[in-house]
Amino acid sequence: MDHAHDELETLPGSGPMLQAKDFKSDQMVRWCPGCGDFAILSAVQKIMPALAVPKEKIVFVSGIGCSSRFPYYMNTFGFHSIHGRALTVAIGVKCSKPDLQVWVVTGDGDCLSIGGNHLLHTLRRNADLKILLFNNRIYGLTKGQYSPTSELGKKTKSSPMGTIETPLNPIAVALAAEAGFVARVVDTDLSFMGEVLSRAAKHKGSAFIEILQNCVVFNDGAWDSIAAKEVRDDTMVRVVHGKPLIFGKNKEKGIRLRGLEPEVVTFDQANPPKDLLVHDEKAPSATLAGFLSRMGEPVAQGIFRAVERPTLHELMDGQIEQARAVPADLQKLLKGPETWTVAA
Image (cartoon, rainbow, N blue to C red; front, side):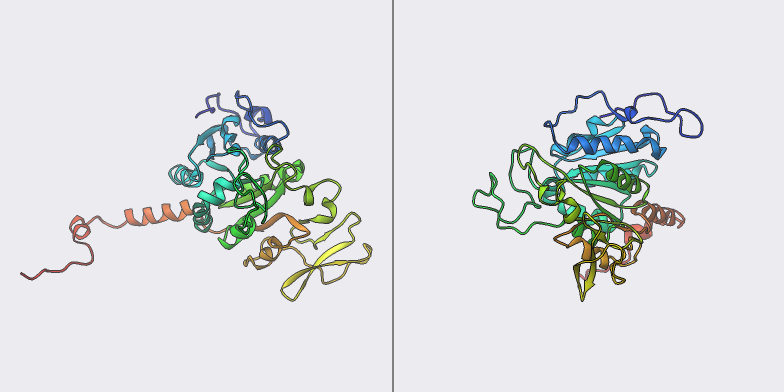
């Protein structure tokens, strides 16, 4: 599908700048009223103008699920692929056209179940993709079956007695696969979501963002226990590079390490302890980020890791150029490095 048929826009600094409305397609947005997908779509469209990337240089790829309607609603190029395979299609797009900015929109079922294997290898290869994982802890499009992130014991249409499977932790999975940029945000925090999306867009390499979002029909209140307005100050902590991990309604709580386990401490906000953990998103090792990803409460949100290394398409292009520099020897290629004679 191709929405990038408008006249080319002028980039900032040389003429009129694009606005969020320029990234809205002519398609009616078909999600259930109150769905968290609306907020994510709005946040993405709002950050696009400031990226200074022409619309014809942006591609949104999706798989199957409610979130996968996303490309229809963006006035850019888009590809609605098949279940669990959005990442493979996106890698092909990026490696064949490295000048494109490629976004992948997927869900906790599409990406972590049938597409789980592709996620691991996409991240370890450092494919230069911006991956948005919509996590509502349920299969919404197929009407309410449990997903890889559903809580243990959750009763759904496919688990009437409660799930018996331990849920996946998407952030921990991404860190284990050595993703260079890993973040978590909540759909109701539009301003912060926009900040994180902007950072991800500018990151060179795999950028993985888990977005905690609600499904009002099949899993309403999916994250209310930690993200509802009346509790979130005490149940979530925002990780900020170079800042100590402090949270609470009065900023009177913090996190420090007790051996190898994060520990919550309460203190006088005017005199915080000296041994509170200070977040370092640039740390070469993902060890600290791993600790934070596994905290039950408070749940960490923000950018866990932001380090860069050569990307898949850069390394691939380098090998192609290296191969082209070697004179072709057809006979050597046909015979190969291993030959043998079969005796009669």
